[in-house]
Length: 170
Image 1 (cartoon, rainbow, N blue to C red):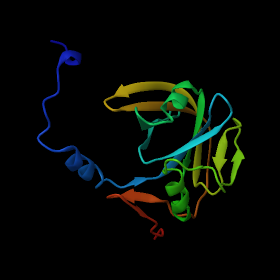
Image 2 (cartoon, rainbow, N blue to C red):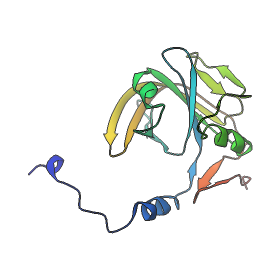
Image 3 (cartoon, rainbow, N blue to C red):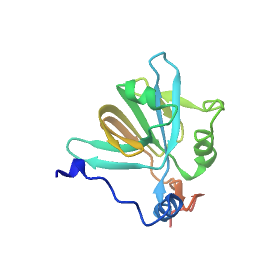
């Protein structure tokens, strides 16, 4: 039987245990921004972001299949990953809330692609959507970086164990 036909065994741990164990891995925090086909700005906070390749320059992130923004990210050709700095904790929270105007009071500039770059981000990656991969209850989105920029001297915003950390660089 091929691996695609094998059914996974029931995990000997709960979903909560799995989430808590994953939470022990500290990550950076980013906000992915894009323009919907109707021109509306969209954005959401993520902590699942990685480099995938240097040549060509690829990054990846994941999005839950049930996310309200999933149809937009299935349709758009480009998006931006804005890596947040320590002073941007409130921005991360704002872009993670449901049922609010996530863009209220947010300062941004159009990037080379015309997409929203968040003011104060410590790095931005303007990406062409290269591929999407089904992965359980998420979709892994791979972007080819067409433009990037970064700032030095600003501590990153970190996420660990369900909390934000804004430690200063030593």
